[in-house]
Image 1 (cartoon, rainbow, N blue to C red):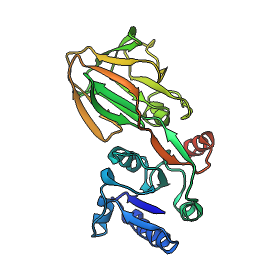
Image 2 (cartoon, helix red, strand yellow):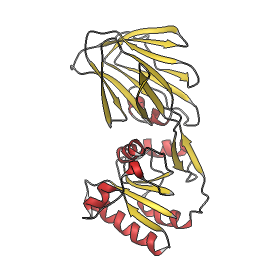
Image 3 (cartoon, rainbow, N blue to C red):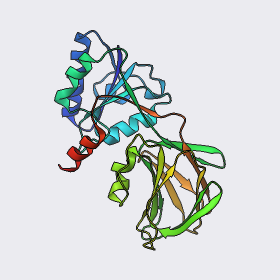
Image 4 (cartoon, one colour):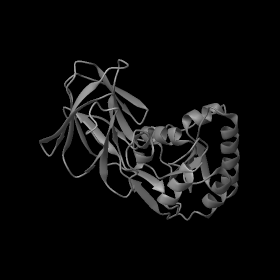
Length: 269
């Protein structure tokens, strides 16, 4: 099997583990290469994720490393996460569990698709989010005004410090901290969570991904759209964002871990 390894590069322990993992996988008959930044940390040359052609991408890191990897892949390749971070909701296995799992992984392994959300402005594609996108003012302590339009019908107007637009996968991330519900990732829906809304009646909403959803900014204050914490797009004061289910879901190796058991374990740390 052709494997591409990605490691967080801000710690020697993670890099050392990744190098040893590569050696062990090569000994098992796998063809192993490193992603470009990971290879540079080892003093070598690697492959850009945008041009990756591996059968499987193995990521050693936390959720941020996995989100960055998904963002950089122009064509989604099945991904397997090894947790080397704080919580690691997107990583299924701990470092000591990973090698036996990968050695036993059949060529035709099971894949779990994770819905991503696509953002567009005036039909211009701005990016896809696996976890969430955040609309926030560029000026601290200033509120924004939002209109939410579903299937062409204005459903809500509110003022808030910002708005989180989350996938079910991202419901255990920033959205949960902001008061949103935990959503089964098998549900295809888009979660809207206002940040510090002015009115108590402005509550989180879960909207079916097959509806036509738009969010309109109605504020004199500048704002940014931050996608998965990786990409920032400047927004105008009256921009309308078209929010849809991305045709390119993220692909994760199914490690047989129950989502709700994982949530219980991670949140009780």
